[in-house]
Length: 451
Ligand code: PHE
Ligand code: NA
Image 1 (tube, rainbow, N blue to C red):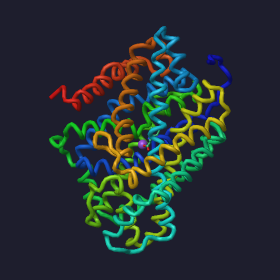
Image 2: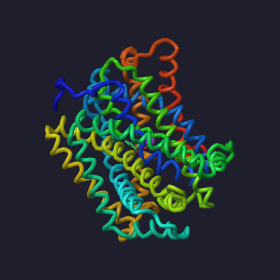
Image 3: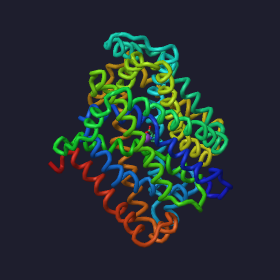
Image 4: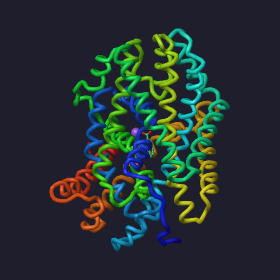
């Protein structure tokens, strides 16, 4: 065990931190998961709860988690141990770090399989989607799901891409990759939007996402939306603690966190708008599930003028988004193995990638050869997704809120977050009361205790 204060790598600037953390946040969650979950959960009711969860739980906890990492200056587990000691509290609080690292491992195993689908579609986009009948695009996606070899091949390629970046370390790997990918991602997004606004049914998409419909909110919508708020902001999985631990002390946490959450929300809404605009313009089904963007968009690309080029751009965008998020799922475990178990970075990267790769193979098989294997009626893919976003992330978030606002010394918290007066009191009370109560109420509601 080391509690030494070896010189720790740091981002080269505040903007580097903002960029890499946006890289972590903006991912498949925004472009793949948000649109399909909105479609499955009935549209605007889901969006409303999701936005409420971002404001009431997500952003305050993003600040809290960043604060824990920066004060801890260590891996998620190491940071929590140090902070627990500092507060004179039990070292059991390290469990926050362990939940995060195990959760990140589980998420990456299915994230990488989905990113593999996206790689396959990037190649298909380069070849050009042919103008086929509507059903053909659903069948083409179905054929991919039925082909474990192909999925495993792409999953392997994606894990290799992630390992390569993380191998490069904090500034030369992660920061450099994001400095290339993030500006490209935003440029492509703006371009696509301009195009989408002209070519598709934006008003229908707008109605679907923002039609005010509070009576459509039910238990499962609440639960799904809260889980997604955690997922999309990368909360509770060690990613934010780890990235925060590479942050210099002179940076304002609240402001940077607002930029990050703002960018993430914006990308989700804009992706949702452009994707549903196409879905409705083509008279397609919004509730298609996880295959939504892979079945509907290629169809649109095959018919639009300039669709070949736009299709390639779109899938490159999704690859960058997925890649920059996946490396943030890998780094927390790597820092733990390096700091706690004295492994070299390459060995740690190799070990973790190999583990995730194996579990990912099981995930790929769960769509075909192993589809008979279910737990609580869920296949492995859905099981991992549910377990992480709906249970582990909110649980870690709850513990982070309790630790930051009830266990740590108030003066330490105030000093670290750099707020004072009313602004501090507001944030502090939200993390102290509002976020934890909201998480618990949604949990109890789902278990059925609140009727
Ligand atoms: N926030 C990422 C996304 O929306 C996923 C993620 C979750 C990344 C947890 C890191 C940690 O795609
Ligand atoms: Na996100």
